[in-house]
Amino acid sequence: MSHPNAPNLPDSPRILIVKPSSIGDIVHALPVLALIRRRYPTAHVTWLVSASCAALVEHHPLIDRTIVFHRRGNPALAMIRILLTLRTERFDLVIDLQGLSRSAIFGYVTRSPLRFGPADAREWAYLLYTHPIHTGRGTVHAVEANLRIAEAIGLGRAPVEFPLPNDDADQAAVEPLLPGGPFAVLIPGTIWKTKRWPPEHFADLVRPLRDRFGLSTVVAGGPSDIAMADVIPADVNLAGKTTLRQTIALLRKSAVVIANDSGPMHIAAALGRPLIALFGPTDPALTGPWNRDDSVLRLNIPCAPCHSRHCSHISCLRWIQPRDVLRLAETQLNRSTAMQQSNPQVTHSANEKKGS
Image (cartoon, rainbow, N blue to C red; front, side, top):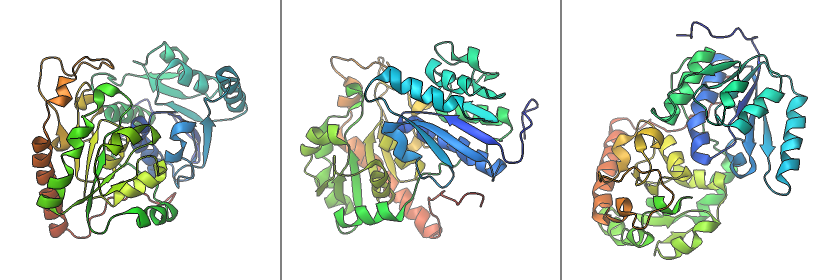
């Protein structure tokens, strides 16, 4: 059902999505992209994205163009270049899903007659929208907040799909790196130090995953995760050796993913993989794996969630034991096996061709 005040758009509107970062936040925005394509199959869709996250949306079958915001070099000059680029565009609709002053300025300079964004945005960004939408940001899940904007535009809010890129080249690049047989992916990294389950605990999972479940182990992550990955005696260590798109391909093939609250965790959730998501200072009700509460492992202690990047003890994560993770892994694997046996045709790909 469309919102009563939804705008009238042409049949093939030119639409700009402003969601520069982060990886997890972009994953949470993908349902809006899917709804746009469902409602306007021939729309021309542009996505403004930061260089560090561009791989998620560049050459995406549902996106016509990406505008990449580079932070390297002089940030003022980079901002001016983007503003000048946007100034020459003619968009029928701008959707700001970032909700910050900078992202609102990006939309404002396009002079689009329809600029939607969260009324509860930070940094006075809502003042630059023609249609500030009350989303409940900070009180509801990030995906739900995005769906409320989509609904106000007239896109509806269902089905919720996460169309991640799925390229044969990425699959082919990853295939020779994998162990034979089923494997678990261990992801020890995350940006906040306070969100990291100790790498020694990840290391303690390797043998029981093999002995109890017959799973080899692959540790994954970016270049900044190499030191943590080296602590884990996995069968294959791919930390710093795969691109973001190749990491997606790796996660597609996994039997189970064990990860901190991180971008790759959200990718695994979006792919529908069996998952153990370790949460400490952040609130899974707001930024956890969407509709996957059964995959979250956290301790109910008085100081959590604190949403702090600094902590002297990180008890919320250190007190989670490897046996707790293995118990949930068994549940997730058993459920996945039961689902495959009951419906062997089930797949987790939502990467439909444009307009299909």
